[in-house]
Structure formats: structure tokens, C-alpha cells
Length: 114
Length: 114
Image (cartoon, rainbow over all chains, first blue to last red; front, side, top):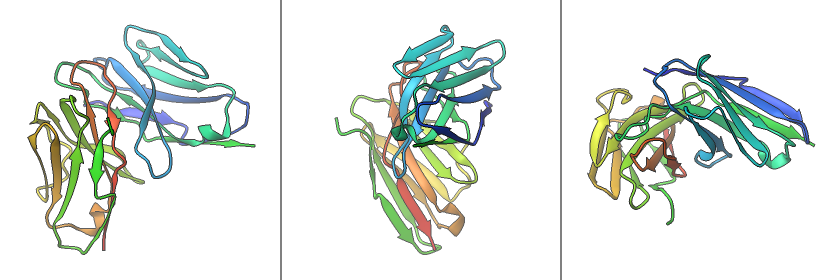
């Protein structure tokens, strides 16, 4: 089955700096790669996703890149703010009409310091 | 829509007791997922349903765990008998089964088995 590795496990940045989180996946058939943000006491929430026919996607301060050949994808957050502090999870799935069986990375605890 | 609704939010039970966790997916979603989150193992997929039918239960840890989805608007995850190592946060998520769509998570049930 799919295996997703995520690095780093913790990341501390100064407010206004950029943060980068990287993930690799094992199953070349995976074609859907979402990123989730989890705040304390809450369930994960989707912040951005990318499909295998796209190499990069951007939404305001958040961007995701995908390299299918190398089987890795990354989350980039620019101009970080204290409210960006949370745990971020990458995931990968091979999505078909039968649903998305998401396999998650182990998470990155991001801390944005003032 | 109120989102994915899980109950209870917190559950404390004694070892050996039966525990039932409940989930109401978002109306119209036809895929439902149960995840378990622990510090040691991260987010693990336990089982997922598509159109009320269990598709993959390979993540269910052992026979003490069972899940049902009697209709499109309700699912349960049961642990009988419960053990201290089952202590975790259990999340339910739902999505549309068409490829590459967002999975929405509930707030989770924090289970403590003493």
C-alpha cells in the first residue's frame, strides 16, 4: 500500500518568514495530494490540494508543488503569521469512483514566533 | 450544512467496557472514513465505506473493533471490550466518492480507557 513520509516533524520560523514542509510517497498510482491543517482540539481541515496533472498550485500565501517523477510534493507558506501555527499533514491517495483512501504523513508541528 | 458530526466529544470508560462512537456525515456525501490519531502512530485509517458498504477494513486493529453504516446518514465504530491502548482521538470524515474530492473531518471523539 501507499506510504507517505513527511519532514520535518517540527518547524519553528519567525513571523514573516517562509515555511516549507516536504513529503514523499511510494505508490506511483497516487494522483491526489491534499494538505490538512489541524489546530488543537479540532479535526484536520483541508487547506490546499493538488492533482497529478498539475505541477504547482497557489492560493494566496499557500502554494503546493508536485514532482511526480521523484514522487514528492511540498507545501510552501509565505509571510507566515502566528495563526499559521498548527500541525500540518500531507496525504496521498489514488482516487477513483470508489472514494479517496487517504494515507497521511506523520505531521509537522509549525510554530510561528513573534 | 453543520459538517461532520461526531458524538460523544469525550468518552472515559473502564477497561473491558463496550464503547460506541457515532458519526453523521455531511448530507450527500457517499464515502465515510474512520481514522484513529495517536502521538505514536499519527492518523491511521481504520475503515472506509462507499455507499454504505465497507470497502477496506484492513486498518481495523483487531476483532474487538467493528464498524457499521446502516444508512447514508449514520455510522458507528464499536470497541468491545475496550483496552487502555485504545485510548486515542477517533475521527470520522466524509467525502464525495468521485475522484479527488475533499474529505471533511469531524471534531473527533477523545477516548480514554482507564
